[in-house]
Amino acid sequence: MTLRLVLGSASPRRRELLAQIGVVPDEVRSPDIDETPRKGELPRPYTVRMACEKAQSLNCLDGDVLLCADTTVALGRRILGKPETAGEAAEFLVKLSGRRHRVITAVAVRRGARVWQRSVETIVKVKPLSDIELNAYLASGEWQGKAGGYGIQGRFGAFIPWIQGSFTSVVGLPIAETANLLAAAGLSIHRDPR
Image (cartoon, helix red, strand yellow):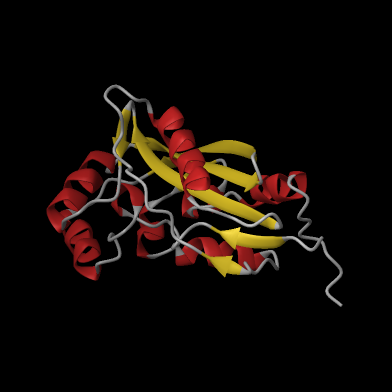
């Protein structure tokens, strides 16, 4: 049986990361789930729950391998989701300014009833942001649709002097771990290109 890869994510960044390792999904679908954290839910369990719920929410065929992921920015026990307004993005970025925080990406791969999952945590340091830097970044609009209000792979990368962990996880998909999960589900990324 030839397996098909279904990417359960509308994120163009996840498609780009897969393309970097030569993986092109056969189909892209966007899961529609409630992403509201539960009362008192901690960032890592929340992120794992989101990835697994996304993987369970989409119907797939027998030969499909479904890949879903969720990325969360955590400041202590607080989950910083995707800001809905520039004001909320500014609030997040002011909190992150001059501090370290964690970025957690959970990946869930489903084939039939079986689910493989893994979460990866990376520590990210943001330099102290000046008002000029903050306002210019907000004006760029790049904060939209990004956990914590920033994307490390874009303009905000200039404000991150170091990370400890996986760069691709901060972008939205830890590539090494994802490749291992796909292989566990029977989909090798090292297929003969002929």
